[in-house]
Amino acid sequence: MAKIGNKHIIASVVAIVVIAAIIFTVFGTDTFAAKAQNNTIRADVIKDCSSTPWIVGMQLGFFKNASINFVDVGSISEQNEPAALAAGQINVFDGHPNTIINLLQAGVPVKAVAVGGSEPIVQNNTTVDEDHMHYEVLNTSQYQNISDVKAALANGTKIKVGTVATGTCVDLEFNNWLLENGVNMSTIKNQVQYVVLVDPDQEQALKEGQIDIASLHPPFYKEAETLGGINTLVTSEQAFGPAAGMSLLVFTNQYIQEYPGTVRDFTNAYKDDERWVQNNREQAGNITAAFIGLPYTSNVHYYSESGAFDNTSIGYLQQWINAMVQQGDIPAGKYTPQDLYTTEFQDTWKPNLPDN
Image (tube, rainbow, N blue to C red; front, side, top):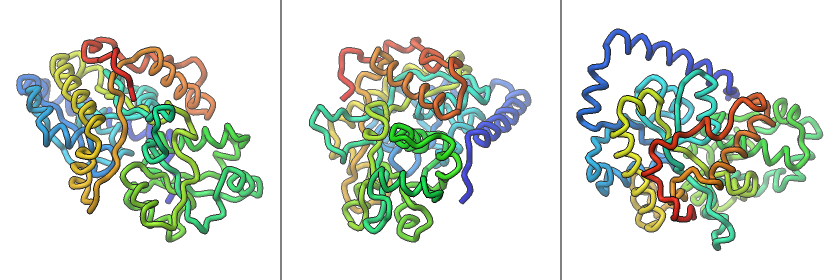
């Protein structure tokens, strides 16, 4: 499958933004006013690792208790989620910092209102089973460590890496791992091909030789490793450190300006929901497994309990920006962490709570 680069993502977003503007001009603001009256939030709930806070919020009443009329528009691929936000098909999504910057690059004004996902901290007795993501290889693969990967690249070999979408955590963090181990960006661009596949399809693609490395999130990496025949080449934390699992709860500037009360109600509910998941991981795993259709308890992501943009999370944002600069995605100095978030809803944050 051909690689879909950041330029293609940005072009797609720009096209949909134009369509959205035409729709808005034709139909006016009546629909938006109705949404505000009903405190309605539209989002897409994908049957993958991202589903946990959304499905828990619906099933356990977090959204209803906050008087949020939550509408699940159905699954939208992560590759198309940013464009869906730009077009108004959804009002909010939880995405990694580079996805937010790609939207800004495409001319879509957006802001994060709280920190969502978080990488568990190893010092808190976590294990690799709790990391945001695992890059997996077959036991029989020639790529069992970084030395194997570097040797293959040095010989001109092209390596195929599965990814749920480009311009997100998978490619940025894997590229960072290669760069930190002495592979230059030119080699990465010419010889590392990112193949867009949803997580549930990557294990089979790996076994069939369609890809050399799978990038799996929970619960799919646990399933693959439990069944055997697959090893972890590197984890997200090993590739990018504690910033790896960071994600942000994002709205368009227009939605924030028009419906700040709805944004505040939803953010409060969403973060309370994520804190519940953090403290009830087995039950949250059962709920997630049932929604995805897995016959066992799944592992789920970790989340920022505070939700706050504090010195630590701002430092993580800067790390994502630096990585994008180093990888040639954005020019140096164009973005600062403060460009990505607003403090308008800091009353929803719990700055005294730890993130892990």
